[in-house]
Image (cartoon, rainbow, N blue to C red; front, top):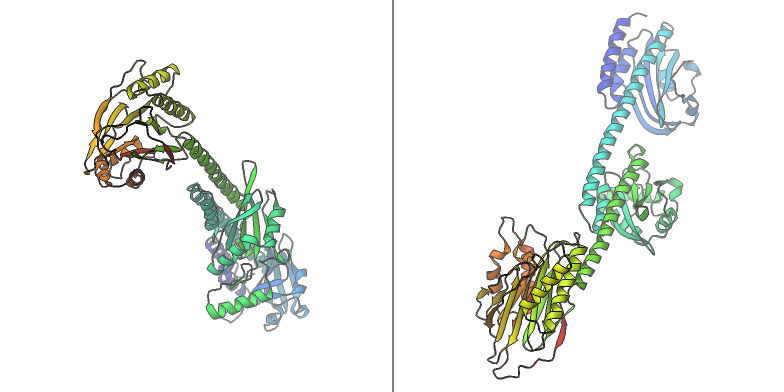
Length: 621
């Protein structure tokens, strides 16, 4: 056949175009024109089919015409099913007169051209459909050569389509990997269970699906936690479905511990709130026409994109137990549906994040509960003093802290205030905290002076061979006949207490002493001073003073000013205010904060100084 060199050049250009094409249809001009230039060829026509008999596309170019005839459709052609090829391309010669319009939509176009024979190659593109490329030729054509050129053109088309699919799969895998990585970061950034579940739903929409519902598994059954949708209106509908729709509840109950992701569509959704119905589609049409936003009242109704709804349900399983489920609402082409493997991977990551959040909640509750048991639940109160305490856990996820405090009535009518801080956190620190507080409390209740009490605690720690040291300060308030109180303070390496005077001045109680648990024989000296009515003594741990702002300054530098500003307030307000101010101040540091505040209310001169009747008031923790 003449023009072989021309065809070879055209075929070379076709391969080059195929390597760059993002869609097979982009090759049309490079395929149709060279074939139409072949001697004896009067028409080139191609078709694209889905599901054996659904004609999606037909393109034809006749000799002497500059513009192709293009038909985009979704027409069902049942008789065309017999044309579907196997795995290999099939070339067929058929007289145009023998073509039946019922199975050959190309027939009408072929009859308009001089060609008497239709040479057509049918071939499979992918599992969803097939295609054909054919030419109408007259008696002058070298039919064998035409068949060869058709086969070569089809080879390029198939290779192009395969490459496009491969690049699409690679891009999809890359996007999926990026989404999974981002999902892990987002979900792991919160240790709040419900916030983690909400993030699971938000991350997946619209990248994975148009809507999502997340349920947490409780002993009584699935508990709805979060829902989202690309449409605000449909999100509200999803929330209602998630909270108590019987169909969905039954589906989740049936799923049980099944690890496989299940996809439901078509008749499987009959009777569900996600069913695609004609009424739902008509309603969506009306909504689109009147509002232009495509928001329908039913999450499952076929909306403006007209894609059938597909529901996928994935079980959230972590560490051998089911923690919940995630239900996706997909309203997109089949090619854009996520794979089961991807959904399983997303569900696994979500389940681990949720399980971590659940474990954190349990641990946080245990830490806070244990912390409460290491602190007094009540403080003594009489008409002579106003007592209050505040405790703020710096970071509950670490472990139990070592800060402690107490207030102990003494046989002589005085009261002993104590506060301390065990080095480190955890079970060992908690055990040492309990030992220290209860040892000091017992000694002080018996009337032991502060210095001796600290020395005996130090001896007990050394005998127990405690591996941690601790700091502590003990202060006693003894009523005096002149209406003042004698403040006796003894410290073992602890931050010095502050005294807020009734006139607003703030002074530091000068104390010193070695840490507890370091040396065997240690004695501690006491410092004495008087305090008057409405003077306030503030004891605290270093979590208060070492709260640090972004610029590096410590709260300690402004503590006297902040305390002075609280003149006239009761002990409870002072304790809570200083704690919250330190929390707001710090940009770094997660140490616990403990405060014990005692405001001396005074006694009239000459009043009976015998021990006063005691009441108990719960501490603020």
